[in-house]
Amino acid sequence: MISYKRLQILKRLRDLNIPEQDFMLVGIRSKEDKPNVFDDVIYIITPDICTPVVATTNPGSDWLLDFMNPKGTAVLKPDMQYLYKLGEHKGYEALVQALPVTVYRDTNKDLKSDETGKEETGWFAINIHRANKWAISKYIGKWSAGCQVVADPKDFEFLLQKCKQSKRTTFPYILLREFTV
Image 1: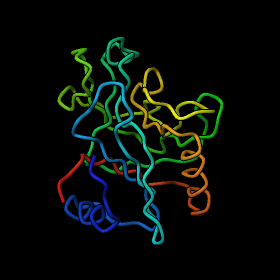
Image 2: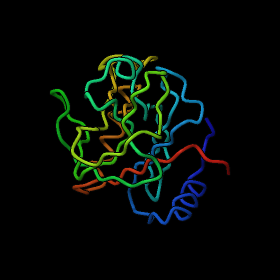
Image 3: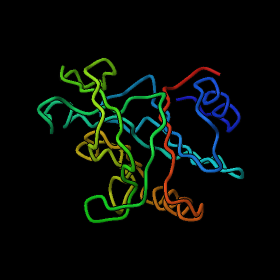
Image 4: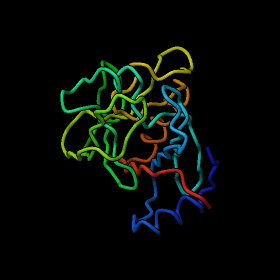
């Protein structure tokens, strides 16, 4: 995965006609798409910081092979902006959808998060949350059935802290494909 600087990310957003905001979460989906591995990054971007946290923007192998939804596994559509708010995910504070999101439905069980299946827009509980509560997670497993998941619980707490410090009620999340600078 390429490590990006704030200005490189902002240029990519301009190229996609996505406006810069004073607080943004920007996920970068790795081209490699290693099955079941946290190989993506979510950047926390404010006027003062551009902090990356290791995450996954792909579902884990468990859900790519055994669908939670009969239509297929949800893969959040990249190069788009979504909106999140503070809420609850499985009994703890996380970011939850504030508006519908667009997903691809991956049905081929090849352990890759395909961005080619049928598109569907709606309320799918595609949240932004942590994996393990106590330790850094190496493997995605059942932590993501389409959610954007932070591997390190301390990084996730930092992300939540920055959301709260922003004084916003909703938080833009832009998911990008890994890009060349």
